[in-house]
Amino acid sequence: MRVRPCPAPAGEYSTSGSVRRSLPFVSAYRDAGLGLLGDPMRRAIFETLASRPSSVGELAEQLPISRPAVSQHLKALKDGGLVVAHAEGTRRIYRLDPQGVAALRAWLDGVWEHALAGFHKFAEQAVADDTADHPTEEQP
Image (cartoon, rainbow, N blue to C red):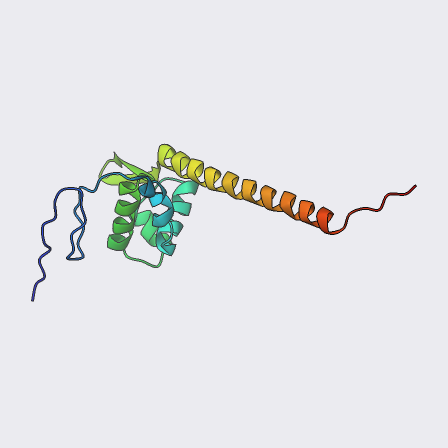
């Protein structure tokens, strides 16, 4: 039996479990790059491309997956804005997209700054609480 997805209005999720391809941009999608790197093979491809641009065949030789699997992962990385490709003869050479990587880094920097600010507040409060619990004795 073949399951056919119910059509949903543009930009909305359907209740059938399928999603329209024309989803609206929402701020939660900004970390899509990070989500893409959650897969170990995509992360390995990303790390390899950080070292040097490579073709599908070159990547497949270095990884325990097939060329079609590498191609699928590259498509996901490309759709997520982390990878770009250009033709060299009959091959496509993939490399990291500097703009996509910069956006991912900016997002991570923001998260890191927020975490450090929270830690700073916590440390200041701990010192204030400790001082209140153990006031220093003054000498005459």
